[in-house]
Length: 566
Image 1 (cartoon, one colour):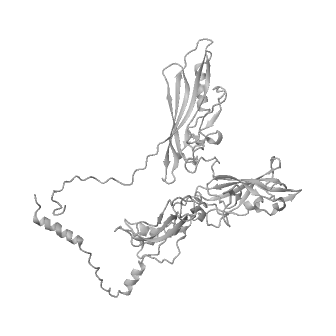
Image 2 (image 1 turned 180 degrees about the vertical axis):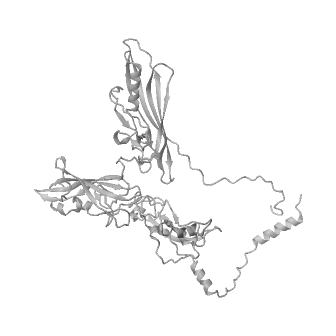
Image 3 (image 1 turned 30 degrees about the vertical axis):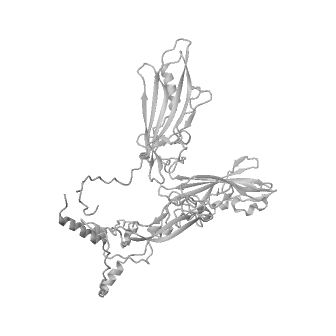
């Protein structure tokens, strides 16, 4: 059946219009002169200069004062580092993707060069969307402004402004003076954040460490809340030991620490203790640490040389450093020595908390102990009294005797599936109830914890950050039951950003399995295996796709819909 002539003519007309070249743009009329007040208003509402320099943005720069692999925008990377890159993990860096026009930093690698080089370009990027922002003309929305705190003096004024059913949050006239300095709260922070270098009055707190070789480098900054322990080799000369700064106590305590970044409040580093080490390795603690012991040459020996420094930083829950102490190990260096090994360590403790070793910050680190504790009625978490407040299981011994192994425990390490056990020799003289209680103590220990920390840095006072341990019992119907196995299942998930997920424990189940103990004839013996096991299960949900499938529309067109075209 042929289509009506009118419909055919319509499609032919549409096709002709599509094939015609576009008409030349119309010339706009010259605008008439605007009044002075209108020009002033337009000038007030003009777009400000861009506040984001994309050439300085780098979303893959994660390590402080270190080069991130394949991060072409990392300012810490040198030309030698770029020559080892295989690709640019972030090839394009932009500011606000909703702007109509903006600058974009483009990074690439010239692999044909010898050695390969990084290529950087700054281009103008145009947003093709019709729903884009032409100008960010509301400057106050570009930063968070601290709210005004009600006081006795300004209460009436705030009540008049905000006390009605509605109020105007925007000012009558937008003040967009681009020359005005940014508010201090927009660019500065009033607290330390994780990983930020601990600042001093002249630079930052140094924690010497080996970089490429084993030799000490003093350019390693100590990061806030980053517990570190390093060892490195220092070149020395006994004749000049009194002039080598790294061998003197003053080098490590002469600069005060800033309580918060970019502040004038200083925290002095006090000397907590001094341990003197002899040439044969014997150590003795000095009774007084008030007097500084500086290196000096005595009988072809360099005495009072710094062999080790242990910093301990105390901070508040708001990220402010309130106390800093250093413990020193001083020793003697013989004339024949050309180098010495120095050790450095730094740890952080929140005020009013017990200094318990963390197992991650915030998420658990594979191989570190799972932290555990108890909760008395109406109080916070009291961590386990065993070493480092750990969740433990039975530790296998060489004798494999359960009664001799009572009290031997091994820590449960995060991410490690473990199994241990022993053998129990049962005789006819053994009573059921005392034997069952003894085996339960062997499997669970003297005090099995009630909670485990969901994160590696969970604090004892944050009760909601601790996961209760669910205890199950699997038994048979018989007059005498003895526990033969303890199975612990730890379910964890990846928490936070997909770029840097953190391990978080969400559920812990401890299952005791019992077995029937039959009465043995007199003079007979029986050997029963007793086992403990730990299994870690990742229950992270897979990432959902960011797109949705288009719906299918099942419509059948007329056979001559495209007539006269095929």
